[in-house]
Amino acid sequence: MTDVFIVGIAHTQLGKFPEKSVKNFTKEAVLDALKDASADITDIQAAWFSNTRQGALEGQNTIRGQCALRPLGIQGIPVTNVENACASGSTALLQAVAHIKAGMCDVALIASGEKMYFPNQRDKMFKAFTGGTDIYRLEEFRESISGMGHSLIPPEFQNQDTGQRSFFMDSYAALARLHMETYGTTQKQIAHVASKNHQHSTLNPLAQYQHAVSVEDVLSERLVSWPLTLPMCAPISDGGAAAIVCSEKQLHRFNKNRAIRIRGISLVSGSNRPLTDFHNHIGRIASLQAYEQAQLDPKDIDLAEVHDATAYSEIQQIENLQLCPIGEGGAFTEQGHTTLGGKTPVNTSGGLVSKGHPVGATGIIQLHELVTQLREEAGARQVESARIAVAENGGGFYECEEAVTVVTALER
Image (tube, rainbow, N blue to C red; front, side, top):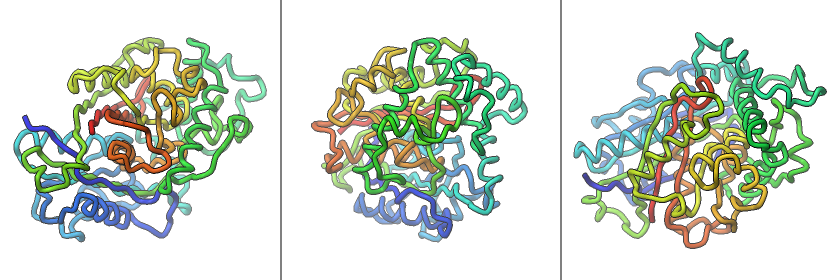
């Protein structure tokens, strides 16, 4: 089967843009990706469109991709809509890669526009998150996670109403407490993740937030769900992303010097396991499959983008990617190993907590950072001599972990 390469990629400025639409974000991202690839609309033979919110918040269902892409002149070709929670974009990429490897096309587009911020529909905004778990077991899940590591919560923060937030923040907070209880991870170590990523985002002009936050300030900020404070949590974001991928036999049509090989890509769904069986966490299983496919050793990895929907999540995912042993992610981060200039820089883009998290587009936005790094075009945040990069993109929540995870390995 043919190798597949990313030949063009782009994402929009991330933030809150009440005046813009899904179509606006999609158009900007697709046109920029085409420009990046020196390609034309007529080069695209198949397209995948990822989005998670438009149906719930705008009422556009069933043919979102066709509606977003036809105004750009993308018509007549296969257009497939993909919704797989926060992993929608990377799931769409996997489908495009499989299509090319099967010989069904040579050049494909993955596009996404995501609009999450509707200031006049706040209840709907937050209700949309609930759909990322089993709604028939929602109360059961809430009761289950509320008991995880409850004794660790300082008395003054127990049963405290911290305001409106998504179900996911309580879920990740519970998982953080479980990790703290099992391995001794500290709230300060989680704060180090958030501070590091906010610092990285000061070097990313497309990030939603571009200001540094000290560890002390992270800890003193408003509590969301203990041990998570506001700077430890990904914001609600709007934005779009697009990537163009091609087979090896058509690579001559593009700039080979800027093409990045997709060396491995794996999608895994969650499974039932004991809460403390971290060795069989969905992220670890996905990474093992991707590494086997790519014939990579974790020691080969020069940098990574991981799904830090909360700062704690980064600790868990660097352990899953085997950048450090299980249970040592907090200390590994606190020692500076994941910072620019460290052993294995993680989330040089600023990560979800600072760069932003427009759910359906996030997977491609992560890859944009890695492609930029591997092309040596990252400017002040460039990782020196980067050759191998890995992205971990999780989505949804079921029982004690994400419902789906995609791990992608890229090579310069």
